[in-house]
Amino acid sequence: MNLTDQQIARFVEQGGFTGGDRATAIAVVLAESGGNSAARGDTSLETSVWGPSIGLFQIRSLWAQRGTGGQRDEVANLDPATNARHAHQIFLDAGARFTPWSTFTNGAYQSFLGRAHAAAGNGGGPVVTGDGSVHIVQAGETLSGIASSHGMSLDQLRALNPGLFDAAHQHGNMIQPGERVILSGHAGHNGGTGHPGQTYVVRSGDTLSGIASSHGLTLDRVRALNPGLFDAAHHNGSLIHPGEVVTL
Image (tube, rainbow, N blue to C red; front, side, top):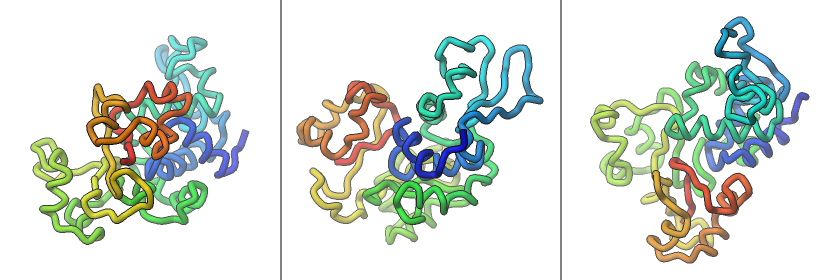
């Protein structure tokens, strides 16, 4: 079934993609499957272990998982809602990056970003979270360029993102598409949040109640600011994943 861009956007959001990740995910879907929830690809690459790539996000299937409901179940991934949910977990397992998708790493998704932003409702703007406090790295970007484009110095960016200046990132000289750059020290008032312009990126072991408490907020306040983190996919707030962004 060929879905409209708006239908893709809804499935992507329900699957767990939020903020700037939502538009990028829509663009990846358009590049991977054209929005065909029944798409089957990579059939020439099938082996005794690996099956075809299935559905919206073209998730590579494993024969051993067929009929199990697992992340790489060929049958389950024909359902667009399931496909989006499984894709989001693959995204998180990759460090909250879109690098498992070749259309992202080779840049093919970029030609669909205009449509994706329109479907996501942000008018084709830059890939940032809704409150403008997190920038999602795109191919070819540098930290100095990101800092400059947001009116910040590189030292200010370093203070907010020490992890992006570690040895693994060659002290800031190597960042990867899909990584998050926190801009909350620069973001302006976003109208009614507990800590205007601030966000928190979830780490392993975090809970929403713990994040709320550590920032002087009630859980109800965090829920009001982040309704998407309290949906069924998140077990009504009991299940969050490293890399997700919590608005404060």
